[in-house]
Length: 508
Image (cartoon, rainbow, N blue to C red):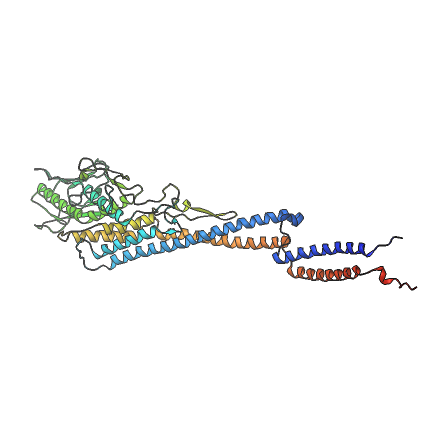
């Protein structure tokens, strides 16, 4: 029979107590961190799953951060687009409500003065930055979207601004003359009146579109089938009083005008009338004079407005279009074509990124595991260009108080601008861009919702693997503490045991 001493019992007990201490430390650490283990190896067979779940959570956090940043950008974009839309409405309303025609010292109306201020606001809005990125520069986010108002209107050195482009185009369109039409004097002994464009395939001046006649005994031909387009009216006899002839003209901005001339026995004739002469030859001369007067009147009123708007549309093209004039100095009045402006001779109004990619697709972000959103914007989108061109043309044009046609010309311009700001069927509007951005915002919001739901699910799964039940851990700690306390107490008593305590004293 072997006898085990208290020393051996104490060693075994201390080993057990050490194990209890280790368990207590582990549980305390779990309670403090709310994690079952501090390393993946501590999770045993669940380590791989925990690693995968954490990777997914990390990716989702990245998507959520991206969605937040994109959401901020989209909110600012909507605000800017709303302000641009408000400016468009304000300019159109001010034209509608304008009072008596009056020019300031610079040859502009109060509406034009306010247009310059509105143009400043538009330029500032288009150069909005989100952080360090320019909102309307497409992919070139580190570049301003548009040039300054002063450069756009007045140019920069050898670079022509809008004001110069308008002046050059006015000459090319025959403003103040006959709008590039030729109406020769009727030859002696002839009863034929003719009108023609001065060049074939020229974009400038009036374009002869069609002609219709009720003149008795007249033979009318053209304008199709001739180059350059021309119309001929041969009077075989005198027309009857009340007979008329109408010429349809297309102006540089695409608008149209109709000149209708009526035969009359009155002499002198009234406006848009011609006197029936003693014979067809005399009547033809009277018709030629009436036609020349009517065309000249349009060239002084409607044509300057149409020419200015066409010039603004040319300038705000990408690249800008300018009159291709030859000679030194350039002879704009005989030009027959447009050419691309260059950075050497024309202000490049749009300074952002430019590519064939649709503006919305110039910025793309992944906001979910399988969800991306397009949210790019460019200042050269059609609706924005239209707003710029129409407000800028008001700000760039001037009139002379001594010009009897100034009011008619200004009225034609302002009415065209008002109509253009109201939007044209089949063209992009600011609200169309707002709708695109709203769709992008919906995508981001949906992605955020899905990401949050997925994160919650993954976190719950991960909690089941490396998480702990704090109540249960607390109970286990309490049990271990009690067990350890009892064990240590027993060990202490065992350590005090001695055989001497059980032997009878020796008596002699």
